[in-house]
Image (cartoon, rainbow over all chains, first blue to last red; front, side, top):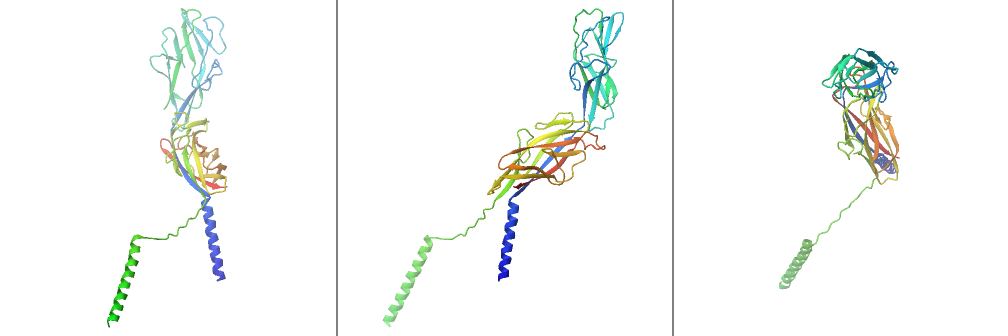
Length: 177
Length: 187
């Protein structure tokens, strides 16, 4: 009789303790889904041999300011100048850095296009003429994760009036191959 | 003889009346007893809620919700409620915010401890963090003093290697799904 009573009490205590544990814990699951896609990124960097970018270095929206330029006068460091009988060209090295993520692409194609027409001056990037009519291919085998110098050059006729501001936007597009 | 007959008839009549009186109340009155019992037990429950700053959870308000980041990349556009706190050469992080609400009843406990673990090993190239705690299949403590009955926001970070598939990076262009187990324990 005494043994049975003890067993009953023990069983009751076990039930209470198990119930207590179950009551003070709660669980749930959060199922997380994501789809990873490859991507590439383009930024402009100042090239050591060229003008320092005025703004936006390390981003994809930079500014390159040549300042005052002339065919024969003083010229800022970082600008390369050449002169012909009818015009002069100023050029500055500009680095383009394209990086890739989650991609097996081996290289990229880089194209450029002027934002607006310029009927007077000639623009080149990396030695390739660029206009606003269509994209020009600067390279079809760009190397990822390396600064690549694509000098920006403007050829200005001697007929251009002194004090004329020359400004344009060059749109670059890198495409993974 | 007549007396005996009368006596018998009286007895029969009395018995008939008694039977009628017993039947009539039974037809107009009913009574019963229910022995009810209730165990007033204390307990807690957990549910996941959408956070205004995060993605909208599937099955929000339950303890088995889903969070879909959609398409993610280091540089491309992201879905609403998903941010990209960091991009490095080796990895990038995408983040959403979700709420956990632990409801208590009948407890003297004022706070709870929240732990979490991955249901299975993280897929290649993927790491999962809740509030900066990197999750593994072992239980990790996320919070030790959670307040009951209110939504508490938590960051859910996916740290994704930038390496290409096959070179340590995650599979691309296919949904990657992972289940995170959460446990709230009353303190």
